[in-house]
Image (cartoon, rainbow, N blue to C red; front, side, top):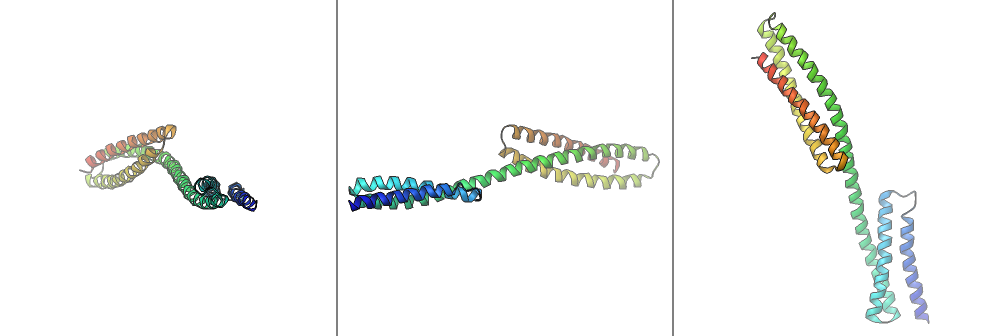
Length: 208
């Protein structure tokens, strides 16, 4: 009778510990990471205790074996649950990192597209003005201005190509509409970079 009572009490307490841990994982004042670890550990302990109890009963065939099996199973289950919780936490962090990367790339693309379109319009006007000035100014003056602008455009193209590479990596991690939208922006910026390259060629001709 005492053995049965001991078994019942021990097993119930172990199961309650798992349920309590799971319940604590739902507390509002816990961080999401803490909740994940607590819930995974609690579920693992409760599940391990149940499996351990059945295994102990099957092997030993008595109450003591069942209680020992439940205790060992609960401990192993708690450890396994913690590792699973750690895996989930890392997955959440990775997902959050990818989402941040995609959001940042979208913002950068929007900014660079607007800036590059504006710069291309300025360059087109500047090149047209230089062609007019070439007839009135000494060729050395036009050459100096053209060389200076060529270096600026070349540096800008290099920076923009680096940003496009980063954005493509972010797009590879995106999916669905996010991937489509980001790739569209990359395509638009790439078109503007090609326009910069054409302006660079025109400036090189003027500086020759």
